Figure 1 (cartoon, rainbow, N blue to C red):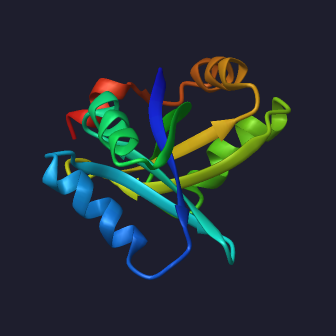
Figure 2 (spheres, helix red, strand yellow):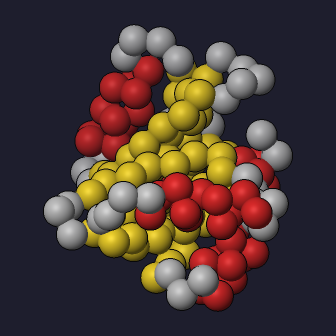
Length: 143
């Protein structure tokens, strides 16, 4: 249940994020989820898109620093404490969350959280053992 995510390093200046999203849009790449973390000099944009390989090629062709890495997409009850219950499972198993970001799925009453772990396979196993619903790359693309 590993999902491919694109990370793009952008110079922190006006218009760079707009340029990135315009480039993806021009190439018919749909953004499913996005996260932006920044410092004074650069930003890291994390994206889940409908066509990861195509997006990676487009970004490289545009001479942007982009990598693909593995994350997990977890369905979480969209209610108070929904995320806390998943994090409690991970904490009790000693799993470290490097970062996460989320979005709401339009067709159900679930939120979807994107997690990055230092031990991703172990985290997948722990979540599956506790009946937590994980989404595949294809399921995210089909949203």
